[in-house]
Image (cartoon, rainbow, N blue to C red; front, side, top):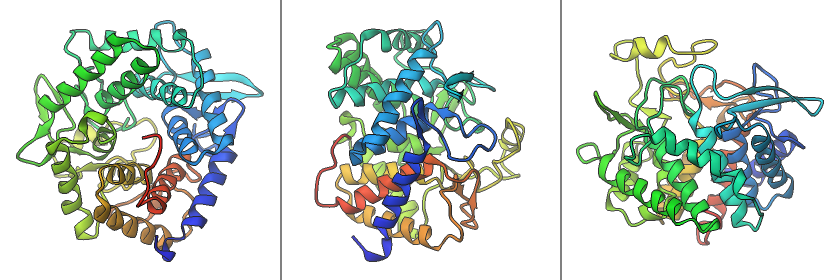
Length: 380
């Protein structure tokens, strides 16, 4: 642990933000109320809850439990889980299952949350999970173990990719692994295993040295998806994978060893790129995906934090030290940083919504690994 990291400062301020965002009805995405960020977003709240579990923080853990309860209460008739909901005076004012397209990862993060809380001894009945698992089975449709995800169907909801997206398959496999164990459901456990085998068979790009982000009937998209790679590293079946180890080495050599932090997707789509038209016309409010911004190569502390957990789990301590050096050096240099949504990769300016729990969560993951280099991190 290096003194210049200011770990105690970042830990205390990040936890304080998560606690302030925690309400009796769940963990809000932000303590600001710009556009819709004062709502409870499923993926943001679950990841914040995971930080709470890692730190044993009762306030945040209770917020995770409250999030699950509200998501159960607002569940759609086929098991749909809300992308976000907004409470006013303890009443649900608005529920969204996705505006431009359905947000499939709301369902998978919800199931992961229940599985992780059950790991801690919290009890849930079958009705909390069964219809949502069946819904994901229906999205698979053809019995081929992989779900077909529409454009805008997950966290990168303004990025032009669709099909059998790796990120979503990984989350489903993780959820079924957890819930198959807790509900003693062999069918779910077997399905988790089948998804993992398909990931091994279908996604690794031998010529690139990392996993393709998606494929569809018209071909393969070999864009590097940082989020998907991080979550993939948490699946137990991947720990001894030579391909996954190679992908970690590729990330280290491509970015960390050159003094750079990985952006959300690589390479960046610029005005000369054939997908620029698709990207520039795909947004809900203002266009955010300029080159090196937002999903288009922006630097997100939430995914740097997950990467730190993966490097720690795989014993890649030299790469972890590089990551922490770069991350905390940047954090401590950014002027007026207030848990901004992301940093532009070219100018390192903080961008997007401030006081974002997504960002605080990622910083907590970084702090946890920086303080636990020689010890096991529970939970993951």
